[in-house]
Length: 253
Image (cartoon, rainbow, N blue to C red; front, side, top):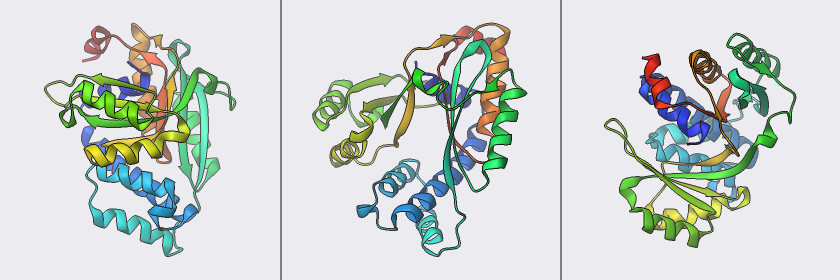
């Protein structure tokens, strides 16, 4: 299982969902405002905004919240955000990519550097980690939308490169995960939305090419580092190329 997918499952298991949902809406609102400010308030003419709105709808964000985020950017009173990518290393030498949208580059860099340094990691130079990942499109649908064969056929026909299906558990439904070339993401989302409605998530991600197994005492340190990075106010996404066994996760309690 890819590091970012594993991390999402771990967060759910660790009972961080309420905190995460609050931050998720904040992140979605910020992305909508940034997209609207950069490319205009019309989603038909602004692919980044169209994708941000689709993501917000997929997470059941109220329409009023979405419109408020667009209006904030259109009103000219929104902050001037810039997108920055930080790269670094964690316990056992794992690679980590941190995507930030911030109105204060100095503050963001300091927070991310501290999150690494206090939890067994260190921030690297730009390019020191990115080569271990592929920048691709990722689309997610709940398993209830279609069986594996139907989703696979529709996705490949729409131009996707790969489809995997992950089983759920007693707390959360499983998902179909569709991967696309970076430049094909919006076309595939549009095609699939016509068949299955809007996805629960659609975005560009950093997908690990290979996973590094983390075991023993380093697992707890890794989890603390990932949580510290996620908790930084300016952080939008965190990706890592680790794998942790269910046994090691269970040992954390």
